[in-house]
Image (cartoon, rainbow, N blue to C red; front, side, top):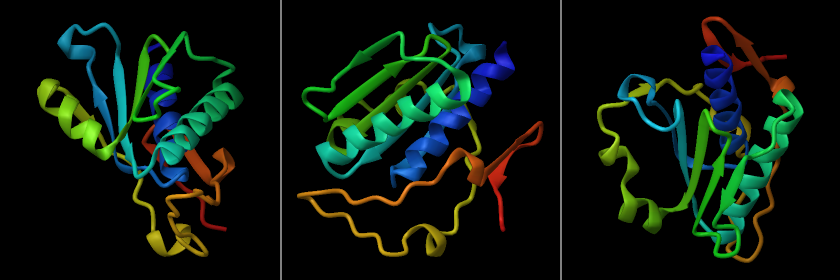
Length: 156
C-alpha cells in the first residue's frame, strides 16, 4: 500500500509537470508521523493555470488509480487548490500564496523524492503562458515509464 501511495504521488507530480507547473516537489512524510504519507507541491502563474493543473491531476489519478479526491479545497479562488487523496495530498499554489504558507519550511525534515528530468526543449514547443488563457499541450501517462527504480520519460 505504501508503494501505491508513492506511485500515486509520482502520477500527481507528472500531471503537474504536464501542465507546466513550476518548482514541483514530492515530500515523503511517512517517517514524520504526519496525517498523510506524501505531499505533492507545485506552483502556477495564474489562477487559470492552477485550476488547469488541478484538473489534470484529478484526471490522471482517476485514469491510472481509479481514485477521486476524498476532499478538495480552494477551487473557487484558484490561488491554492488542495486535493486530498488520504495518503497523498496535492497542493497547487499561486507563487505568492506558496511563499506565504511555505510548506517546504514547515515540513523541512521530510525526505524529498526526486522528480523526472524533463527536457524543456521537448515540452515548450508552441507554448507560451498567456495571463488571459493558458493554452497547454499535455503529456499523457503513456509518455512515462513507471518501474521499481522510479519513473522517466519514454523516448520514441
